[in-house]
Length: 249
Image (cartoon, rainbow, N blue to C red):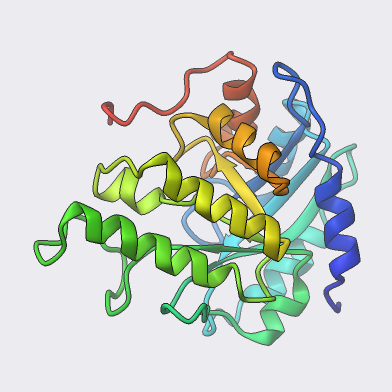
């Protein structure tokens, strides 16, 4: 399957217009047992149908060595058609400050949408936690900003995933608003959707407002790794669940 930029734009266009308490019933950030999720693709899909989603994106983690991805894509294509469109996607990692990503062309061609995210800093390997003694808070924000900004120049990227997620979750640093706005404005210029993420962003409506002001495309995601996470971004935007609190766990 060859990826189509016009098809991508058509998919994303569907979730741009929504009222304050009526977000588009889409969730574009879902993981399964193929990587670090707790449930199968069928279970996550059935939950999406139950909570009223109309479109969901299986944004499974993958890297160049993920030779299982074709089987995963076939599994998503084989899901029952129960009123919610299931899209094949991938969440890829930033490798460096030049915008390179850890993903093969074969995987990219399987996908309807590609999400690029910062999960670690250059030189780090595996699942990384904890602070960096060699970096002060300003350097940490700048490093994540530069990695995310570089991905916006990569034509393979359709969605910038959970901007400044490492600052918030790993380092417990709140990036200044102007850094978010700078990324959003560049996303608008490059045509990459900016993800508003329920797991990483404590003020999603601020980001939505900034996207609308800049003319940036919005993507809504829950970072769902279990059934209870599916559609959480919609519940947060509706005021049915609180947004993530950086002072909490």
